Each structure stands twice: as structure tokens, then as C-alpha cells.
Image (tube, rainbow, N blue to C red; front, side, top):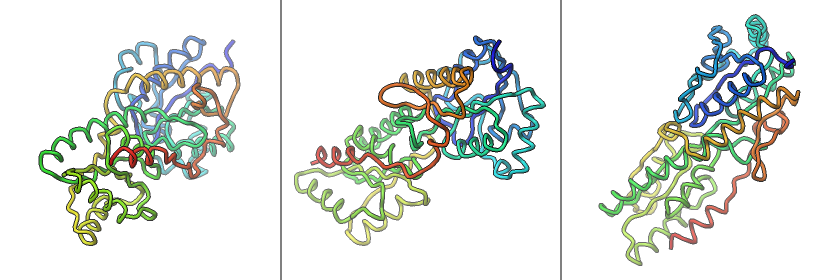
Length: 325
């Protein structure tokens, strides 16, 4: 007999390509283990609304290639309150949900860990965020697709930059993490990357631009990591103009990076993590997170995957500067 009769699954926080692949894997793996799956619509908020549906193998058919999440997502302030979390637990019990698979980023996991501590409900997390900023895993679902989307956009911007002899500041997503900026910078042949403006020396970047001009380069692409404050690229644009006389255009890629059909890598990783999450529950390995380490999907304790300052790998910045001569 299975340890659980019914488990729940939800997606929370910012969506990302590949979430549907994980949902499909969780549902079909669980059904194969004789466990029912109930989908919670709209993240943690869906618990309070009791927007909960039973899922079947056919309900997750033809979703592998779709972006976003069929379960929808949201950010839920109610879940920050202890009394509300108690209510959420009671609602889950009412619907026969004995364990949870939660997919999302740092906020999702923080809420899940507190929920587990208070009510001991078995929980396994699946890292799903294009920011790739979750501690304890080298990869989170959606990152590869976001890089691909941003790279293709930069390729198109470079066409018009070349045609009009322009400098472009292209802002990519990532919140506190420069991971997208660093990868896209290399893959798009950018002339430079700005991911920590407080430490960056714009004079050095201007020097690189002017050196390129001297050898006949008439356009350049600078990738900017969005950071936590809105309008960063426009602030840099103003500083380049006022202090150095460098004209530039700004292109903020924004939420286009969160959508679209997931890449093959994201589909594989999401499917493997969904499968692993259910196996973890069956084998009583919780609270944990499915993580990617040293080339394989494994498990890590949930409390080891909570938000901390994940040190960026600056190798990409060195590569960009070496190749953009």
C-alpha cells in the first residue's frame, strides 16, 4: 500500500517554462504508484479559495510543450500569517491531501519550510525559476529557455544596432541573480555585462567601447542584469551620456523571458525532477528539494535550499571581455 492516498501539487511565485513538464511527471508518476493527485489552482492562494481539482493522466496530456503553468500561479500574502497557514493545513486535510509537491523559487520554498515546521506535512520542492538563484542546486527549471529567448532577442537587436551604428543596453531578468545576464552575454557575443552597478566602473566599460570604435566597431551590445531596483538600464544610459558623452538605446526584454515553449533541456530536467519528487515522497525523504548537482538530479534538505546570497560565477564576464576585443 502507498504511504499516501492523495498528494497535492501547486506552482507558486513567478512562472517559468518547464513547469507543465514537471506537473505532468508528478501526476503520472504518482498515479503509477497508486496515489491520487489534486492540483491546487493559483499557488498557495488556491488553498484558501479551495480551488482544488483532481488530476488524471489525460488532464496532463499535450502540455509538455506549453509554457507557463496549467495550474496557474500567484504570490500569496496570506501565507505569511501563522493563523492563515493553520487554516490552509485544515483545508488540505478536508480535501484529503496528505503531502505536497511545491514548485517555485525562494519565496515558495521559504513558505513551504515554515509550513512543514508548523504542521509536519510532507513536502518536496521542485526549483522552478528563470533566475537560477536557488541555493543548493546548480540548475532550476526555466533557466535554459530564458537564456535561449533572451539570446534570440539580442541577436535581433544586434541587427538593428549594426544597421544604425548604435550602442544598446539590453536589460534581462534575474532579480538579485546575474545568471541570465552572464550566460546571455557570452552566447550573444555582447561587448560587456553590467550586473552590479555599485561595483562596476562605467569608465572601464566606456574605455572598451572607445577601443572598439578605434578599430572600426560602430555598434555594441551591453547586457544589464535588472537587479532589484526598476529603471537601472535607464539610469546607466543617463550616466553614459552625461559623464562620457556616449549615446545608447535601452531595450528591456522583460516578461518575454518567462514564456514560450521549453527547450529540450528544460523538458528533460523538469520531467526528471517531477519523477524524483514523487519518489522522494514514496520513500519518505522529506522535506527535500529536487536539485541538480554534478550532472545528476538528486535531493537536498529543504532548509539547505532557502534564500542566501548565491555567489555568481564570473567566468562568463572574463570570457565576454576576452572575446569582445
